[in-house]
Length: 238
Image (cartoon, rainbow, N blue to C red; front, side, top):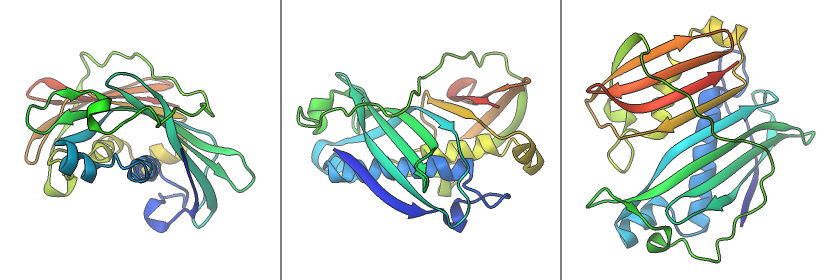
């Protein structure tokens, strides 16, 4: 199944240049995947009530191609691109009115048991053989990058508005912590071309996170850690 829809870039999705923001892009990807899983009857509410499980994103990589302006119409497609015993991969692709790629994303996810916090087999949480993988539209591959020994940039506290229905920090909220390490001027002078976020462990309300960051000519590395243990690592390419 491929979820397909057309929408406009809203004001809440836009940034200082009146175009779709990086944060807005990650939110669109999350919304498309949750809507797709809703259609497939494997959404978060169903997982909790029927299977005592919840989905977690483990990796998310996005490539940015064409900017989408405020109020511009665009199409978005979301589908399962691959799956294994315990991992499922979603692709989300957006195109502008001319049919040009605006962005494409690949997300790796798994289901955790609410009681044990252990990874569940996909077949135990409603993912059946009829949910076939669709051919990939764009080439997006997860990378390997080392975020050890990064200097401390700042500390942030997880607040109530960062928490989702699983009572841990929502995946897009980590993006807010990461993206806030940049100034408006940096966003406007160094457009992000590609970005990957790897979700390693969970954090919860009132946790203090260390934000560590190193910057190079074309690559920034960012690490969020709790009690000196990695929670999220990120690669940003310019």
